[in-house]
Image (cartoon, rainbow, N blue to C red; front, top):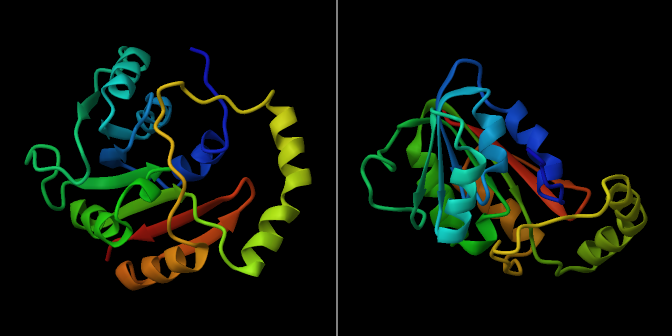
Length: 201
């Protein structure tokens, strides 16, 4: 199956590489068209994708229809379904280009609560350019981004994919993640993305 490439998909290997060995249950928050779910399915016994968009859930089910251990649910996050959102029920949670659609501290707390002890969280996100340093670092990326885009034939995103500009600046995302998830690792990346990795004690 043809796999789209865009600035979010570019960091899927980082996410998949953080899945713990012997992973039982994995959750992808804001799963979109299921592209990441297919990769997580190779590392986890059961994978669940949730998204509030019915169009995205339909696309994900079509993309992953041959994976018997993958399931999908159209729901907000965090949700109330006890089968999907039982505390401590996941060994791995991912969220790619999702946090800026949600209340940042509440979403991080919800994800932390869903993880079992020793479970891992991998986030790829976007943040708002606010400070002079943000503008300098962002502008400095343009030449490299053009090269990366050209090597992949340009970025392609599903037409129904919800789009929203990030609200929190880089500094606030870093500060909030360190406060809510002590010991988390925040790093800025090329393509105007950040990664946030955390393992629950």
